[in-house]
Image (cartoon, helix red, strand yellow):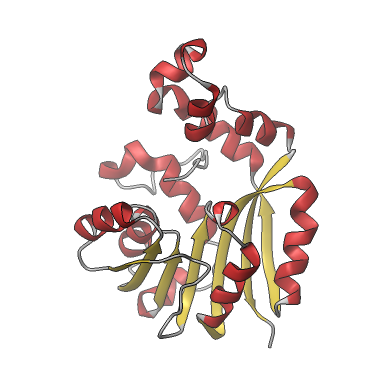
Length: 229
């Protein structure tokens, strides 16, 4: 689902979801940046770009009561799984950089996937087209330290305003440390038996991404963004 967020209090996570508490906590850390989401979020419409197998949509539906949710992902296999997992939610197979929304959404969500898109610029343009003037864009991703200013300028040049932002490397690193051996026991316990690509794919404690997050060469950034009015 994502790299996770270590929190000292996981009691807000349902008992049935405890095995994924760190993944859900990361989504909640980002979504809790949105003002009013706990009070009026149930009346909002939401769109998640890069929904994967439906984890973020599950959090929005089950922890925030949002009933009108659309999830899009490039992988048809992910969409097929998500549609069975969450039958009340609309899922669409689409590229985030070419998706054309037929409606405007109150909340746009994108977590830990934009770094893999062909163009962040084109993606941000699609986000803007999917928003009305009071919509919120909750965005989180890993960004190389030397690219951070470029990404933030890109957002501002497109007519967005960054309302809130936070760097959460420490909590993400703690999550990887705590959950790596539980999730990926053999690669973490016996790293020399597995190729470097596997460690990088799963982001174990032996991966380059883990070391870069620890050294803050790569930053894990969370943003709350709106259109500039």
